[in-house]
Length: 349
Image (cartoon, rainbow, N blue to C red; front, side):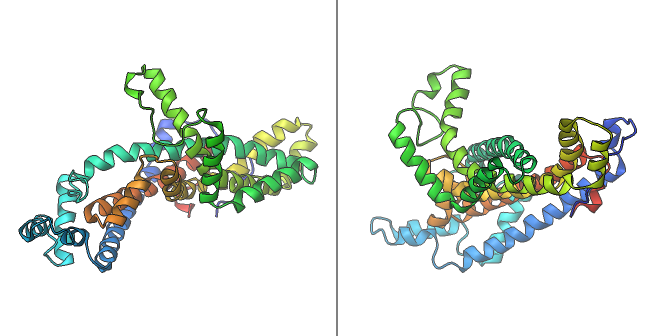
């Protein structure tokens, strides 16, 4: 857990030198190595679980009388499905390490890498925009709720947070779809772009994507917003009871400075620590938002790949998903260090 630190003046230093010091470099290298090991173990486990599932992609083709047996045998040999699972995994692993080749999708008959390259930006765009919206709304409301403790404002905000956390993501998505239906055509309910997207100007294309992002971003943000607001409120209440806050008030400092400089500075640290986990939960929750709003992201791709038992597409998607989660957690730790240079990275758990 991150310890609360009383605000003390820091000695002026060169920020670039701080980031290039041995502590940061060693920490980043250590986390990267740990991440690579995690991805390796996760890929092995995923491959074994997929192999334990009954049947494979070719079972569907075998049921089609129009497909000759020779074609089935050719595809089995082409994709290496006639080999033991450990041989299949080793061939796939060597391809990934040496050529960044995740194999060929059975369903799309395209390289997995090209499919991932199309879908990952859409998922990242949705997740990052949701985090930005969530923090811009939840942090100020959490502070307001703490400052107005036990007032009607605080009670209303707490009820809103309870309702937000109590709503399952799929219910939220359904409600938004119903609202969009009544407001049609004000809000789009599917895809990432309009039919005439290619004909728009560069600014028009950006606005078109942003327009289509409204509903899935709200669906992803509601639950996260409610939890983050409650956490911000609790952290602010805890910090505002500390002795150094009372000392700052006794010195006659303006209340705004006490709250936003001395209080918020320490209350925000645990939330930054949780940023990586929030990023992970958003990537997991994107399955629902992408499915309901037909968003062409990684979540939908994994769901379709698992349903069709598209082995190499599943492996590639899971590997990239794990990589994104590990990178998100690493960035959260580095952001925490940037916000408060007094924190030692090796003490972050």
